[in-house]
Length: 372
Image 1 (tube, rainbow, N blue to C red):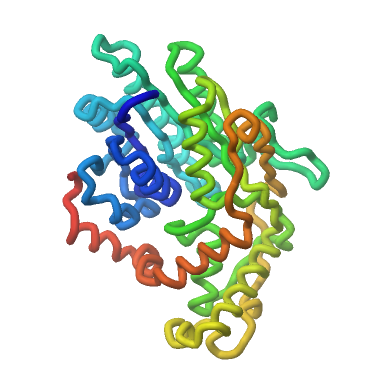
Image 2 (image 1 turned 30 degrees about the vertical axis):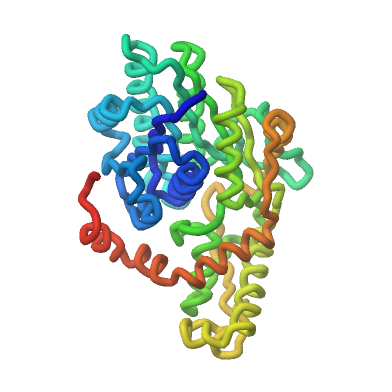
């Protein structure tokens, strides 16, 4: 697609979505970016503060379960590109509240596709070019054993949690709109993301926050579960490549080439926090409840808890296709990406305390209208 684009980013106030919005705004400043976000517990408009004053940016407070708000936004903004992040994504929540995942991830995705079909394919005023990019997960592929090859784009789907099943369904819907209606789509399946602005329910930010506040570091089972870790900026670069260079209708796996056991992640975190406190005495004043502030080891907080239901043992991404076709390669290894993440968390205590106690919603009401 050439020329300035009019991009609708769903879930753009969430962790990956907000990082993508800032990335895209900086790299493509002439593109119009419209963020559509319901601002649920994990959506935080403060994540977008750096782009709020740009003339090419607009925020719409709305839910992808509302076809009217999707249609109105696409019509008013003449949207020609959709980047679809909006999703319920926490596996633990999907075990306890699967209905919300079916609604948002399946029904919501179909609402977007129906609106896109109406405005891009069935309309006399359809844009010359369009693209629906769908952001998915490696969890749709199921689980791997210790000697199994990594997931490729040809790996059969075998989702094991309500979250993974709902994302698999959305992947299939996107594929069907391409093959049935001719919609121009691309899909990317990523590994575990981490980095700035991640809500502290996921492993890395939760462990950092708990370590700094002197709370237990709960590890499922024996901590042997393995994940491939992807720094969020590398994910954004991968999506960029798929959108601009990928084949229409194709799926690309985006991984970090960083397989780590959960317990090794936690141990790395503990060592890094201890080192940070040793190098900066002010941290002990800032975080007096942390073991490192008292001359103790952060690892003293580690405890093992009952394993999660249906817990997949290993995920691993083979990103060969994206590398060979698109030139994708992650720039951060886990050590460098984790250090960037830890530094950000240490420097942004106000952000994570606010999102954890909900006070950021008051911040939003003081600073912004529901839609601008």
